[in-house]
Amino acid sequence: MLETERYREAVELLQFLLQCQGQDPRQYDEWQALLDWLNSAFPTFEKEDASEEDSYAEEEMARQHAEAKLAEDHLYAEKLLYAVTEKPLSEQTFLALEQLVYLDKAEVDEVLIRWIEHTELHPLLQYRVFQTLQRRGTQGTLTLKRGTELVEIEIEAVPLKPEQFPAPIQAVLERVGSETQVHDPTLFYFAQELWSQFIMAIYATKNYRLILSEEDAVIDIWAAALHLMVSESIPSGKSDEDIRTLYGITGDLRLKFEQACRSMRQFVAAGIGG
Image (tube, rainbow, N blue to C red; front, side, top):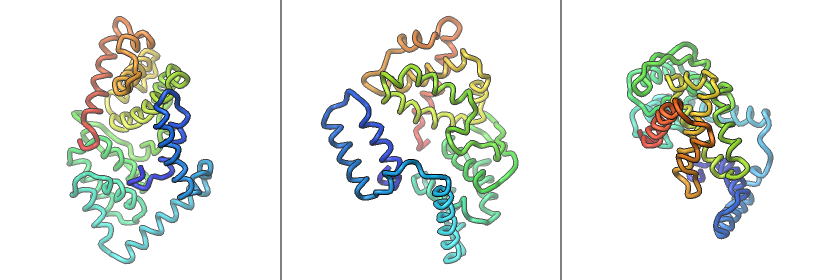
């Protein structure tokens, strides 16, 4: 986060970690020291969440910055598009996509759409391009492969924030929260992170549509799979059997639970590098 100048997110993560229990006391000292440094170096991050007015101001500043760059260099859009579509995937890819949001040039849409429709990309990178197009005001439907599936993406409907996903998507995380927030807040934090990325990766696919069915059993299956994925990565995590008992995964649900786990494991194994 610090390397990519995501200072506000770093402050929020440190504040969260300091509330968690059961870690090595030296770890808390390190977190507190880092938080103190961030708050002294960037005092504005001590404020509560930015108001809508502040968000609008930040957006407007980003737009003005991109337009100024374009005025200085008439090839600026082409350079950003080259960085996105031709260079290896890195943090620079996402920074270039962010800047492309603010450039009023029709060829940006054309190049990005042609690229994602004809190139095999990591699903998270695909999703970031969907968001870029949506924020640019692009309209229409894209038909492309996500993994092995051919899907249709309605650009205007692509969620830009986690809270904009449909209620069943939220319900899976809430179900995990009901089992972990009080006794294991650290696990819930990582569950939020993993679920947010996984949902973007499977957006519009068969698994995504399955979760939208809103059936209680489906919510339990995916919540249990999410809980297990995070538990396997931390020392205090529960066993497979304990989690199945916790979420009522018995009988016919067992196979569907294992399928959900396999989908999540494949996503985790792929990594952002694809």
